[in-house]
Image 1 (spheres, helix red, strand yellow):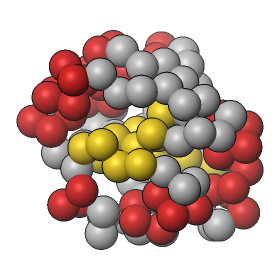
Image 2 (cartoon, helix red, strand yellow; image 1 turned 90 degrees about the horizontal axis):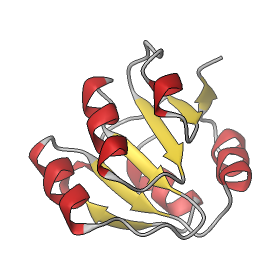
Image 3 (tube, helix red, strand yellow; image 1 turned 90 degrees about the vertical axis):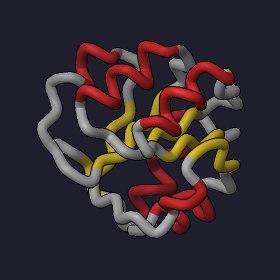
Image 4 (cartoon, one colour; image 1 turned 135 degrees about the horizontal axis):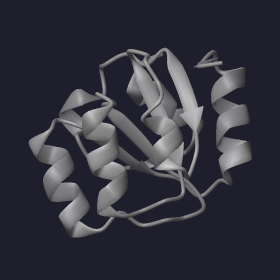
Length: 114
């Protein structure tokens, strides 16, 4: 699915990376544990998380994740946006719970990592 479709399914707000909404994502992973994220070896992955800090952006950078969805109305902070933009990431804010966001994306065709 294109990231633009992901944003639509989640009624999300893009806060960084609007120019990359045509990129494809195939897999989704939901976690607040960044150590779990570092164990993944998947391309075209979107991270769904409620952890809104610089560690999340740095972890996504190390794992080559190009799209992060922040759930539970978590707001992306300016330092996070600055680093994400440098690494051409798309950051999306979403009002849904992690469970609800993952369920909506799964129903729309996003595949789980496991």
